[in-house]
View 1: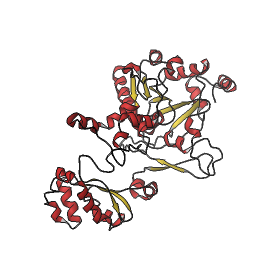
View 2: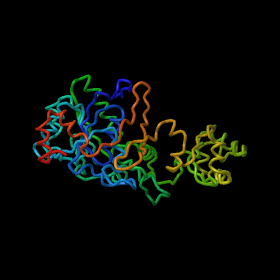
View 3: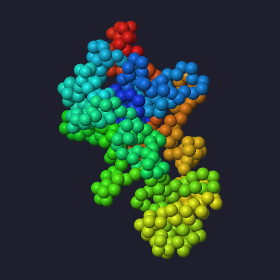
View 4: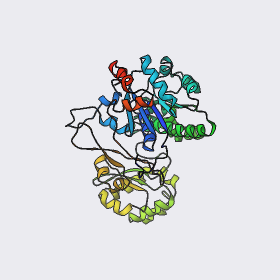
Length: 408
């Protein structure tokens, strides 16, 4: 970092990243975006996502897939054999100088390596240790599924989000993005920052336990209150809201858009814009609950209007007046000025390709300590020598580790 570059809010924080695939890497990338020095410890074969693609057509190197690039920017990579005593010794020495460690192994793996939270915190009492697992860690309450492997879709299924997502009550549908991973990743970064703040006050770190299914459930808070207050089990209801009307998706002549006008004020504005002001006082539609009881009629009269106009025409009519938005695909997003102005599409180098690629930008904007995309995701072991020096290995000692395939 040059003297002229603004410091991120987490500048000076060192994080050991033992995560792979999505939930953990997304968590540590959020920290890296805001200045943390993230040392990504990869197995000698690399993070699994390096091999999952997609790749640029001209990329013959195939070291950094689109998947890997998307959630590992701003990090340093060291390839390390943790099954060897020497590899574990390197990790121990790195932990001694770290503020946080994040892992998403299955329960018991770190214990089998001899690197449990208790062992590592004995070496470094200030260490914040975060674990992201499908069903959490037994330290916070042992789930009957604590040893089950879990991916995004498991978190979505058992956390409740699929039970309310789908075209009809009989058809649960997976949410498009990997929210079963991404939501836990976000909440884990939040937990880590809280624990770091407390450690700076007390001088003592702690264990941060993040369960994928718990995090998904927390974001489905509505189903809890609906069931508790009414006894009703919420089911998928398509693109309409179960409690608000209108609040959903309608068709334009050339695509789809969202309209949200559940308050009486917005409803009156909507029907006025549609040249149907008499519906504002119609007792069938006067208040939200009335509209909810006649929602097929409500959506029918809205679509009778919107289907006669293009998305551009409706944007000009509704935009800034009622809560409204056209449904964008990624090509639309690349053309939308909002995302360019907000720096949400950022160019990074793509090793092996003649041209750069874009990744999603930093969504949390900080006025004094802005986060940013500083550099692309690392090649496997690109920073191994640098990281070995942090652990006290240099020269012939480091060469020996390379020659014996302890590091790469």
